[in-house]
Amino acid sequence: MIKLLLKALSLTTLLLIGVVNGATKTPDFSMAEKLQQPAPAIKLLNKKLVLKNNIKGEFNQEKHIKVLSRPLKSSGKFNLSEHQGLIWDTQQPTKNRIKVNSTGLYEWKSSGSDFNQGQWQVKPESQSAGFSRYAKSFQALLNADIKQLQQEFDLYWQHTANNWQLGLKPKQTSQLTKLISWIKVTGSDRVNMIQIREQSGDFSQINLSSIAPLNSSTSADVNAK
View 1 (cartoon, rainbow, N blue to C red):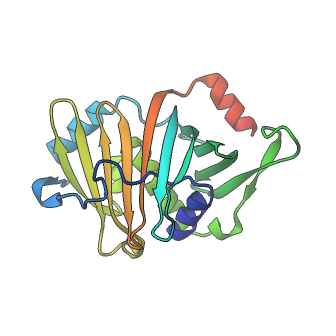
View 2 (spheres, rainbow, N blue to C red):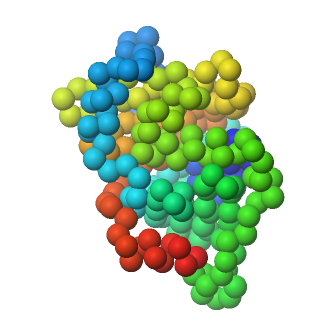
């Protein structure tokens, strides 16, 4: 089911960004502290992450695919709420909107010239018992939910006074090993960047900005869609 999620995000140029300043180099996890539960690093990371659920922000991203000479680029806005899940609203180069939560994967279908008039349509392939688990892992990447991530990944932690990096390698028992080689999350008081190396050799990265609490008016708009 995670393959379905990755495919859907790729088709809408959604999932994460490419080769920047040698970012394709595999992280040296041996130099990092492997997180165990409980660990002081977990408390420190949770303390740094002031904003977790119920946030909004903007993204700029690229996805480098081996068979393409140029990366896929996209930008837009996102909402991450405890009740709605993740809404990823691509505005450039074309408008596209998806929603991912514990109940499945949804695509926004506009009903006319106004893109905001329409309704959500569920992707039938996402209606399975296993999808909720993988959807939670994807959402956990955006808010660095350590407890959720530890269910699927071995975690590796490095930090300085101002910044931190969280390395993730799928557990040998996880089905994610078939698709993902490693993930690196970088941040300060919030998640700033996510990088993913897929087993296929494709590489992705997403930069997040303008992150702020999701206010009641925005939540109401999201609920209406």
